[in-house]
Length: 475
Image (tube, rainbow, N blue to C red):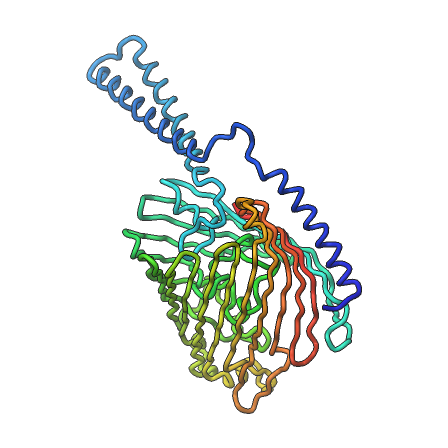
């Protein structure tokens, strides 16, 4: 870790972050006096539904009396009054159903989704609304590892604001979606964009088997599915899960999923990558089609299986395979095979997580020449990366409930050009390591304040270290 401005900034910002965390903790640690328990909404909903049923019975009785003859004096007015009362109660019931799931705790989720994305699964019927967001401050070292100027400029960014909209039609059928706003402002000349992260129909007749179709998150690694900021450590997502497993990665498709006891699985047939977007430094990331007029000449299979032998321990693997040329014969077969093994352990305030991923791309040389006829672009025929992360909630042994103050460390190693086709040259900048040291503060499970320092390196010696602060939330 270098000294100078970056080091001083790190110390000052850590003091500010922890001071703000302590102040926020004092405000949220206790529930308001006399606050109703979570079950009150369900009780109120049941009472209203029973009242509506009673009023409808009275309405049916009045209609039966007036059928076939002139209404009795005042009967018509009574009918209209009952209908107004029923309509008003129906609106109140709908409002309760919209808020029925409440603010989800960060541990309450269904397999393959974060807590806010899971809300629609927890309601009885009707509309579900949730969301998450994060703001990120990045402070870059003015010098690269080789002593030259870094050329980087510090930034503060509303990285994303996301809203979930779902609708539960029945106990077995629902719609779920995620709409993302990035970088605060979208439009001509603005850095932001608006995108659909996922939108799908889900039919689940039983726990062990369900059908899902639409724009789907690819079930690989951890972050691609579980990317709500309070659910992971670090102001930035791991580089391995950005470049080797290119989160956030979604494609149009359909498939099956389920969980039975300690086992869970997902398997989808989806539109594949478009190899015309591959690059040396970002690997396959630019080939994601994201459901936008996606070329469907080539499709792919993606699947995942997880095993939880004891509470807190998860072991799993996932894989993807499919051609990526999308009908461009100059790219050859362009078949991509990508797989990962992942594990996680949570117990006694300790959180361990690890991912190992590898990719193989056939005809990488042909793809490079199709993208750049000069032969200067070397698309990796092999990619690889792994990371390990350790965090410890130091408040866990103090009995502080849901509050979490977790120092953490993460080590990553990745290379988007682990090997290249004969006749092409690797770029030493793409063989990278990242050491991240930081702290995550959660005054409640739905809010996280994070600060970390990232010691970056590459074989070329041109990496730039940085300090980050992030504010994340979900609801």
